Length: 75
Image 1 (cartoon, rainbow, N blue to C red):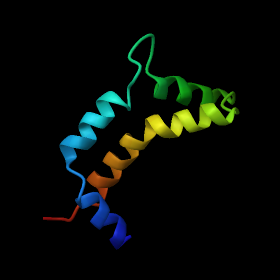
Image 2: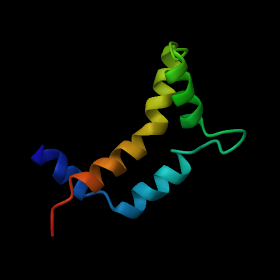
Image 3: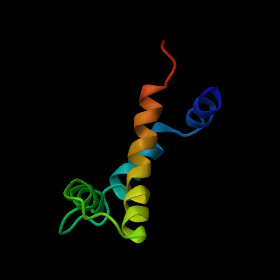
Image 4: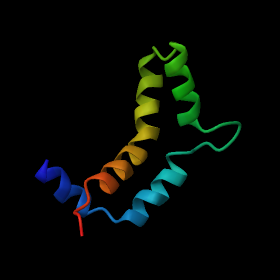
């Protein structure tokens, strides 16, 4: 866990925000890929490996941002 904190501390929060707003929400129309893949996941239709990889790719910036905000040192 300490190693993860060190890695996350090296990533600026502005970069994670930019990644969330670009890769995390791309493409913007007709709906973001992540939203589409989450709907597929909850509907039970997310079964193809390419769809699972696509969901993980678009979710990665959001997960990293959440971890950075959660695991930041208490000041």
